Length: 203
Image 1 (cartoon, rainbow, N blue to C red):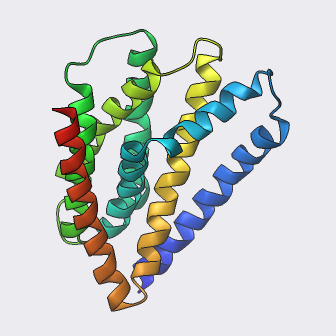
Image 2 (image 1 turned 180 degrees about the vertical axis):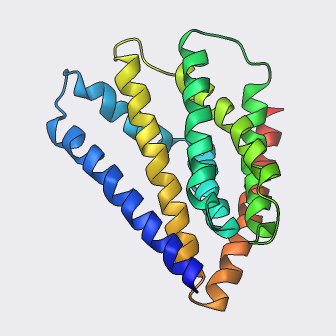
């Protein structure tokens, strides 16, 4: 119970801090200005279903593992995504990156089905690092030439962090009722099935 309250408190503080960062950027945005780059980056992860599902899943799995993993695993993903984004901007080639991104939805969906407080977090952390690089690389490749790469990258990193927090909050809510917890596990299975569909489309 104490750990659940701690997880909720950490996620609330994290969300509050990110909203402070996010709000001025949205308020200042105007067509044709430099802030457009930031807003484009903020919106980009939301419109790719594979990216959206993977990023929410990272938050869910981190909360299922509990403790320091609630911030450690999402931070690892964002850090790896930054590296991947830089590789994408310089057009560094990562073989079969799209296949890896599709696989991330499958693997993280299975993580939601299986993750619990007593399992080792390191295999999932390693996978999250790997998938973070792939997702960041894809975002880096898709940066429009008309926007600032730095602002665009900052935007999708902030948006990614918010999606992680959303996943944490979903998991904290699910702990309140057994049927919600079962529903969360079921959603992981559905997500894994979606990952299979993404894989089939990629092959």
